[in-house]
Length: 143
Image (cartoon, rainbow, N blue to C red; front, side, top):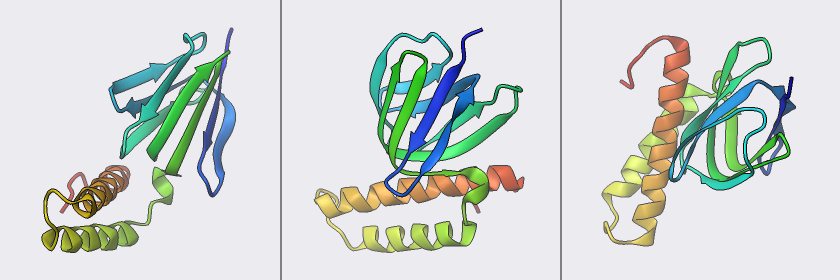
C-alpha cells in the first residue's frame, strides 16, 4: 500500500516530516485533498487556513498554515509556509492580542492602501487561529 510522505516547513522549523494517510488544506483556488499516488501538483496556500492530517492510524490532527505553496511529487507532499503550528500549540491570549492590534491598525488606514491590505491579512490570520484554537478547546464561538 502506498503511503504519502508529508513535510510541513516554515522559516523557523520543520513542523512535520513523516508518513501520513492523507492531508487536506486550503489553496488560493479552493480546497485540496491529497492521498497517496496523487498526480503531481503545485499550488499556492491560502493566506490563512487549516490543514488536516489523517495519520496512518486514522486519527486526525489539525494545523494552522498560511502564506506559502504546496507541491506533490512522487508521493511526497511538501507545504512550505510562512507560518504554521499545530492547533494545540496556539496561544489564545496571544492570538486575541494580535487580533486587537490588527483591528486597531485597520481603523486608521485608507481602505485602498497597501498597509490596509496587510493589516486585513493579519486580522484574517488571527481570526483563523482563534477559530481553530476555540474549536479544539470546545468553546465553539469566537467571542
